Image (cartoon, rainbow, N blue to C red; front, side, top):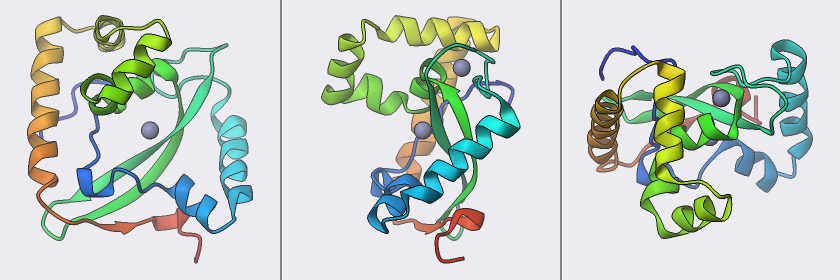
Length: 161
Ligand SMILES: [Zn+2]
Ligand SMILES: [Zn+2]
């Protein structure tokens, strides 16, 4: 994994665990009250702004930050933060720019891939070439990780804890 030199990075979730998230788990367990509590605490602790770029007065979405143990193939939920929808789209650029569904939704929001790239470069104060290199590397890691089945560890967010 390359050194984290950017504030805003692409974090592609391996394909086997694409549709598995703590939000869905709480929902399935009828525990959405826990999800609402997490969001409420985030607002109290971190304010109503994007955790990455600091944008205010914008719709905030909770993003799940995972850590990957590439030896034992365990995906661990380590943090949840509120992101603005642009930073959040960069995190899941695989969906927004590389699936039909995502591209359609992006267009519906009046946005293009260019808008996402511009946001990335602005937040990270970097060039387009640096974005492209970072994206390529993120997909390389994603392809590698998508070869495996991943066990999930919800850490402190585990509903059974
Ligand atoms: Zn942001
Ligand atoms: Zn997310």
